[in-house]
Image 1: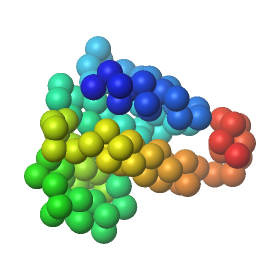
Image 2: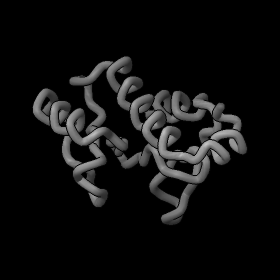
Image 3: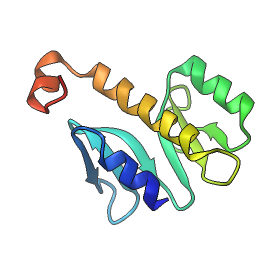
Length: 112
C-alpha cells in the first residue's frame, strides 16, 4: 500500500489530506480528491464506462464504497492486479480530476 501512496505523491500537485479525521488518507490535486486509501483498498475516480468494464474484468474492483458508484471504483489490493494496472487506474483518476479543473486552477497549481 505504501508504494501506491508514494506513487500518488509523485504526481504533480498531489497532496495528502485527512478531511475525515486521522483515517482514511485522501490524495487530492488542487483540493479535489482523486484517491482514498482504506485498510486494504483504494477508491479511485473513473469514467463510468471504463468503471463498469473494470468491475466485469476484475473481481477486486467494486463500485465505490460510500462514494458515487457511477464515477468511483473501490479496488481491493490483492495479488490479482499488477502494480502497473493499479498505477494506470491511479493515473486515470488523477487525469479526470485535473481535466475537470478550470484553466486558471490548473495554472495556479502548476498543472499546465
